Amino acid sequence: MNCPRHQSDPFWKIALEEAKIGFEEGGIPIGACLVYKDRVLGRGRNRRVQLGSVIRHGEMDCLENSGRYPPKVYHNAILYTTLSPCWMCTGAILLYGIKKVVIGENHNFKGPEEVLVQHGVEIIHLDDEECKRLLTSFIESNPELWFEDIGKITD
Image 1 (cartoon, rainbow, N blue to C red):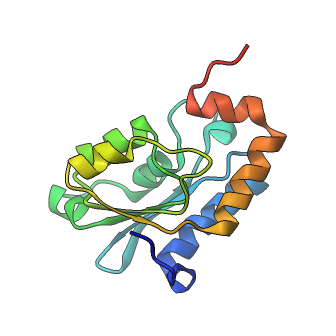
Image 2: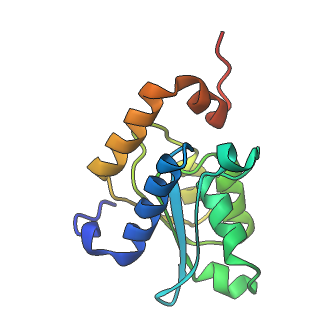
Image 3: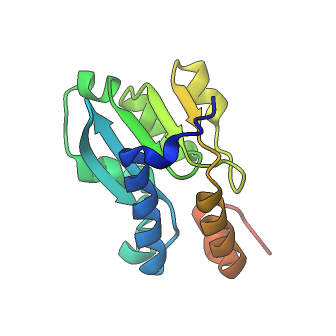
């Protein structure tokens, strides 16, 4: 499902802002925001480079920054992310029972979205042009770092 009015969504703006902050910090420009009942529980960005981490993708950083909540909160939360979730982030979404994920784009990378759908997760695709341009620019300038982030072996 596509959502043409996402530019006015304040939670989407937070996820995109996080991606831009990550880019400015020299990291991979992927951001996320977790929302429950119109309240931001947490926000984050891919900070693998900044923290020297193997797991701090945007969604994982967002969840870490959100803190602990009862399962019913996650089940009724919405996760906004600028990029289609990878297998690791998909696993976290399923583990915590998040039932709605808003994805900025999946042209530069498409994770196992069908697995999310098979487990009852509603996906909304924004197909955001600014989001695509930001990541495309990063990938063109930093292919090795990008391949490291998605676990692609290059020779």
